[in-house]
Length: 133
Length: 133
Image 1: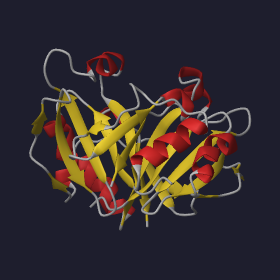
Image 2: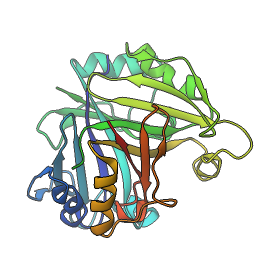
Image 3: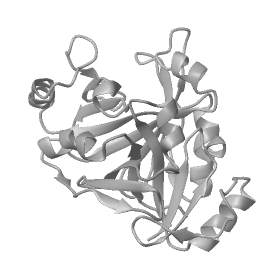
C-alpha cells in the first residue's frame, strides 16, 4: 500500500539558491545539510501537505552528477511515497513486475528511515523511492 | 504565498495503464477524462495528502506530444501549487524574476480553476503550475 507523498526531490547545482524562491514565498526552508553517505547536500522546503527536497552533489562520486550533466538547469529527480512495511511493499511491487534498484535490501535514507528505489521504466519514466514511515 | 502541492503531473502514452500500479496499491484512481480544451486525457490518483495526475495526449496538437518524443517512457511534466490569489502570486513571482508562460492571463485548468504556468528555467528545471484553490 503506497501512502502519503513524502517529498518531491529536485536535483540542482545549488540547493540553497534553488530553495530561495520558496522562502520568498513564505515556506519554511531548512539549512543545507551534508549527507556524505548519500553523496548529496539537502535543503528541505516544508509545504502545508508535503515537502520539496532539493539535492545538490556532494563529493566526487555523487549519484546525481550524471543526472545534472543531462539536466544542466536541474530537474525532478524522484518522488517518494511512504509505506507502512517496506519489505511487504517491496515484495508486492516486485510481484507486480516492478524492478527494485540495487540488491533490494533497504538502506537508511536522508530522513533516517529505511528506503528503496524502483526503476523509472516501470513507473512512467519516474524514479520512485519508498520510505517506511 | 505558495500553498499545498495540489498534484504531480506525469505525462505518459497511456494514462490508464500508468495508473494501474497505484490502483493495485490501493489508491483511488479516476476514470480517464478527455479534456479537449487542454489537449490531454487525465487520470487522477488520490494519495492521502495530494494527487498524481497522469496526462496522455489527446488530438493532433497535444501540448505534451513533444515532451513524450523526448521522454518515450513518460516522465514528470509539472508540479502544481495552490495559491489563494493567482493574480497577486503571479505578480509577486514576476517581481522575483520568474517568467510566466503565455501572456500571463490565467486560464481555466483541468480542475475548473484558474491556472498559470511558470518557466522551468526559473524553477530548477521544473515546470510550475499555480492554481487558485
